[in-house]
Length: 142
Image (cartoon, rainbow, N blue to C red; front, side, top):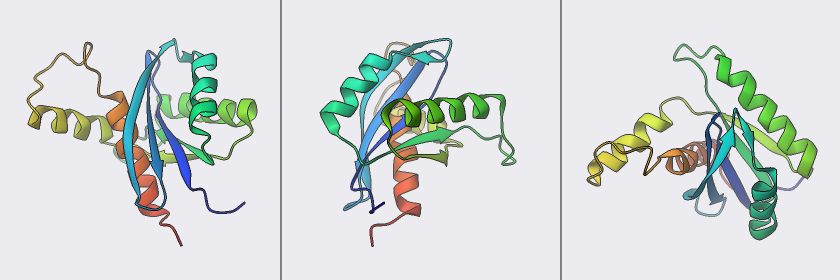
């Protein structure tokens, strides 16, 4: 496959899934939206609509590893989500270590003046943008 130009990133969670868009030319990503999930099951129709709208070349799913680099319980669920994305939409799906992206996203929001209220103003899409930028940094455009 040729080098992907446009990618969607997913910060997988059991209650919500952050989504971001990024592209190879600048290596930057930005938050798109936060999707609701029920016990880790997303609204597949909403994901399909996002894929139709953005027409990404590939997808990146955050892999929530433990701080020592070992897989966490959520790692298996995120990998299953990645496999389902690939199976449903036939797009290349990559996983990327997402350690500390939610922490960093909360820090960015705190510096912007947000104090708490992460249920009302979740940081999942920002975390998705951060993990996608991490993947883009590790896979620079040729």
